[in-house]
Image (cartoon, rainbow, N blue to C red; front, side, top):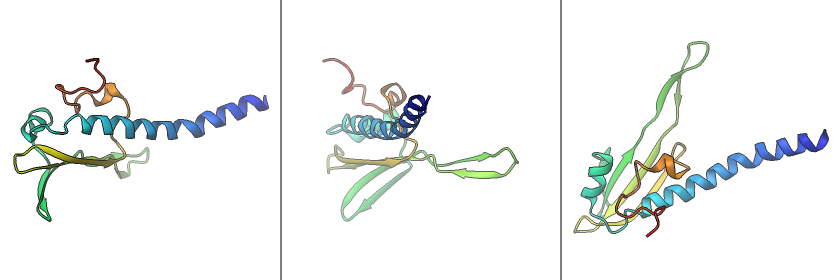
Length: 127
């Protein structure tokens, strides 16, 4: 019986860490699939960015999935941080030269990230 409890506790402790590692790997592949592409291709796939910024001479396009307001069982409204922010930096020809992402609600698996991956450079497809 003790072994089963230890096994269950181990699974419960390791599972969230493996999910975080999966998210990092998946999102890095998604973002990297757009490297070198024209920003118009991303806009065609993802829609218009949430923001466009120029910071220290670097042009950035930012997509932010935002947060959600939910209700708990007592009817109290809660603001849940469910954002996944994706940022691309482009050169003078509007080609992607850098990227970064951050958030707690980014896809962790290929099948949940299909809508964001570059269809012309899908890292999960055999070439």
